[in-house]
Image (cartoon, rainbow, N blue to C red; front, side, top):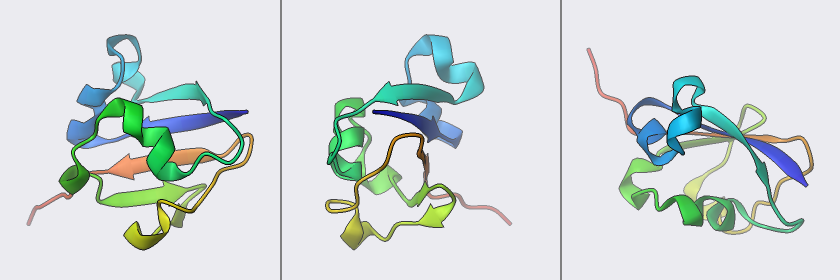
Length: 84
């Protein structure tokens, strides 16, 4: 199945160079893969995986090992962001 995978801010550096300008890519994932399994090949530092959304819905850290996606879903991840 296919999903849209989006990384924001400094996390875009973990995407393949050719898709970094758009900060997203289409991924083929196996049905039943959890969020943690989907992002593992990208080697994102765990402390940098702060805000995780599936189709705009927040996924708590405790649910990321068990939450699975459906064909056509969008998985978006933001690092911690500070500002004033």
